[in-house]
Image 1 (cartoon, rainbow, N blue to C red):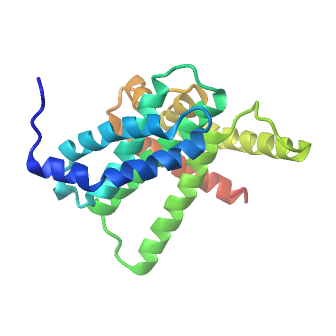
Image 2 (cartoon, helix red, strand yellow):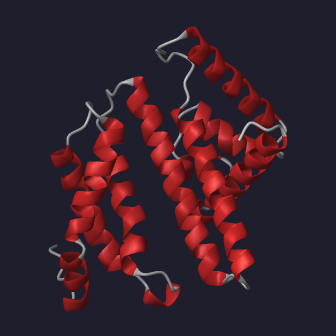
Length: 223
């Protein structure tokens, strides 16, 4: 059955088509040469349409920012379905997915509990950016990368070991979430389902895990 979209949905979709092109180019730079911009643009347009249909203005998040995560998510899901991708491409998928999950959780938390002062806003932003760095590092790091120098290879191995130590100290549910997503390659929603959690609760658990890992790395002076 053909879906007849309302004028409001179509207006949202048409107004943000440029977002698809922007996200496609950004993502292609991370995935290159495994994926083309045209491939990503095709996936992203479908994601934008679904976002336009599902958008709820009462969330307090502007549509463009809310749609950004879903457009990239559609691209990630589309690429993942291809199956045969280089190991580095899969690591980039995990990094992108984890970063977007943190951004979405951050937006939901900010809408539900606005900052009470400029200092509070600055503190939250600093914590969010540090968490993003941790999530992207977790997703991007691999044990079989090619490095320009032995020092780079040693530095990566040492950081990976410190991250693994921080992960091992997490509470059980947070640890299982991180291990399933980053070390076993499961999607965040799959990892949540395996733990008997809803997707939204799994997102919160992932954000909490990244927060704890970031605090551990900061305490040891690694970030």
